[in-house]
Image (tube, rainbow, N blue to C red; front, side, top):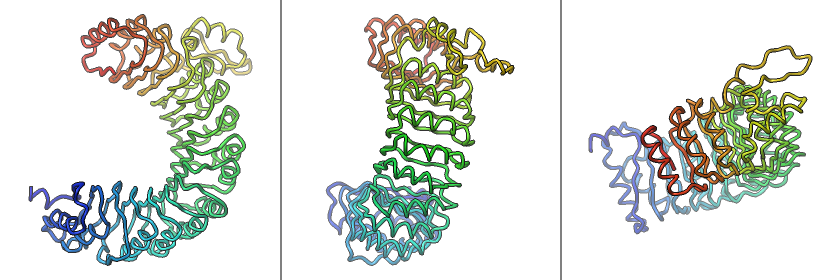
Amino acid sequence: RQELMLNAEQIEFVVPDHTIYRDSIERDTISCVSRFQNERLRFGLKVHCAQASLEAILSGLHKSGTSGRLTSLTLADNDIHASEDSTLGQFSSLTEISLGKNLCCSDGGRMLAEILGNSKMLTSLDLGHNKLDAAGICAIAPYLLLCTDLRKLYLGKNDFSDHALSVLSGVIGKCKILSHVHLGEIRFVGAGFTSLVKVLGESSSLSHLHLGRNSLNDCEAEYLGHHGFFSSLHTLHLGSNKIGPPGIAKMATRLSQYQSLRKLSLGVNRLGDVSIWQLSPNLSKIPNLGWLHLGRNFIGDSGAIGLGSGIAGCHALTSLFLGSNNIGDEGFQSLAEGLHRCSSLRRLHLGTNKISDLAFSPTRLQQRSACCEDEHSLSAFACLTTPMRTHAADNHPPSSNLQHPWCAHLRHLDLGDNQIGSEGLSVLARDLSSCTRMDRLHLGRNTMSDAGLEPLTHALAASGVNVLCLGSNGFTPFGVARFLAVVEERCPLLEVE
């Protein structure tokens, strides 16, 4: 054990719940880190404790003689509080500090300022989910400017005021290599938001921006669309706000400039069908978009039809989240057709919608496609049996992808909490037999009965499904027992929930 400790890169220890006194915390800290005899070894420290003072832990590190070799300090998710009576100037080797989800407030900001003043090598600072207010931020801000290598800054879920945001904007504007900024759940107001957006939008190093859970409305989203250029942005999180069609209009046209964007989260907003029609034509203009979250946005069949044509041109898209919307059978059909063309997609979440057996009915789909003039109104399942009709002026042959099931390239499919019965399950099972890449399939919380289990059993033997969720359906105990017995024989590695 001693030999392993000498070569470790990170120490992790737990302070017992009853150890709440400063002397005990110091003693436990010294006992843990003093095992490091190699003075040249740099290491990180991660501490779990129910209640502790930050100065007690750091005092223990200082007395153990290891503070000069500490590179990362993780004290997140504790009940740590901070005060002013500490001398912390010895931690000059720190590159990462994580104090998220604690009780650091104004005093904590002043105390941390002292650490930051001697940690000019700092690259990552996490103070999210605390009680930092304007006084705390103002105390930290001057020292952050000295951290010329700072790349990651997490300050979400604090008690910032408009003044605090203005001060923070000045800091961010001078951090030339800052790449990650997390300001979720801040509740932006007034001039602080506008100054922040201008600074962030002009950054050439910013790659990850989290502005979720801020109650951003249409006016603020429109302002973000006007001033946010984000040429280097990889991830943009705007989920859990109040953005609707007026706010998304300007952002949708701006998306074509986000050439580096890979992840876009707009979930839990107020987009609706109108916003999706504004957004969809611009999705294909983002060449590297691989992750798109549009869940819980009041999207119905009309929006799903527009999105189906939009994702057809997204050749890098791998994950699409559309759960908790109002997508029905016709919307699902159009999405399924778009999936034929979006062969890069691997994860599709359509749970908690209004998809029923009719979405999987070949008869209905053939009738629907016979009276449709637009090729995008064709269903995926009709395409399995009939060639794709094109406009008169379009002489290109139909895509070869249409010869395969709509879900052939998926690895994770979530259709849980819909209205799919045994008829839909039987049709879906027929397609699953060709899904050799499928790893996880979620069909729980539907209206399926024992009649759909037999065709599903045959499909599973030919597919690559490893995890199957069928909970909260209408199966009888006898049907479940028989299904499990057959699955155990034919698919011994399949995990059924």
